[in-house]
Length: 143
Image (cartoon, rainbow, N blue to C red):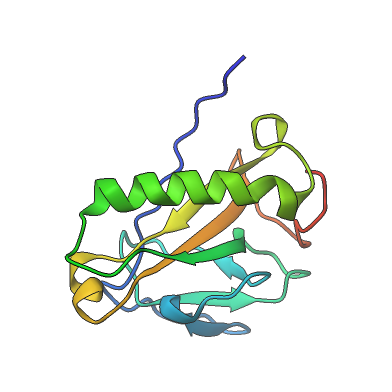
């Protein structure tokens, strides 16, 4: 049986999100594997709110990769690359098969504006399928 998921979060470098108390902001261009975040409410963002994985959060970075240099390929092409690479890296990080996991994969991709500023980062995120909050790391969790 195939599970169909909505997996694209095209949130990368358009507007600044406001920080909340008790957390810190991190540039989406400097995200790293293992970082736990609260997702921005806006469709595009230059920063995301980071927090410790033991605190309530929306998602965890499980893979970071880059799109090839050249002209901006468009969101569809970047989303296809992100889907392939994020789904491929999911099992190893989470410790369970993507299709049977209670987690979903989503990602942040460069926008046309951020591409012009040399942004090539594709950030893969794991989050609960039901969009509930996490309170621990998903690394090797088998969730």
